[in-house]
Length: 218
Image (cartoon, rainbow, N blue to C red):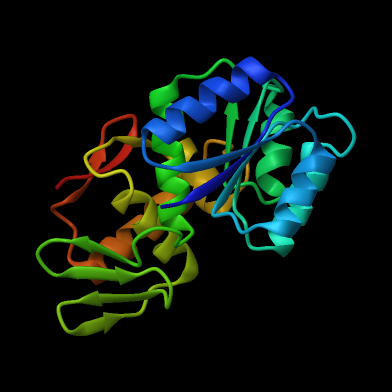
């Protein structure tokens, strides 16, 4: 069972998030401010931290640095919804950035995605009939053969495996894999996806979606 640290100074929001996560089978610990969160991180092991940014004392950005030294992935859960805030959070190393108000189903989906991407859940991801990804060793196999993927190709593959049958927009793909603001040039995304799907024989399953991006069909 994954253990998640919720760092939120507003008790009603913390209670709502905790109830949703525990209902989905996660163990949760709540810290009301940055100092209390740092103490819990020092004393206990966590698989994920949900951080508000505007906290009493130590803010979310400082806590993010601390979490990274402990190999604890972070999702920002904050009212700071401006584009520059989101870009800053992602560039500093957050795995995801969710603005308030949010839908609980979306929160649960993003938590699951981050845990999978960071190897905090099942070690092996599979795409039947013959593709297996070991998220700890980062080894990708097609049948019995290991497939050499670049770092970006591997990250793209994980993103699609965690979002099967979902049409992903190019800007979302770029921001998640490259960690930078998408400026409208799709060639980088397209070229990397074309190479990755050729290596894995996914030409007919990883399909282009007109004026959107790509979808992995399973």
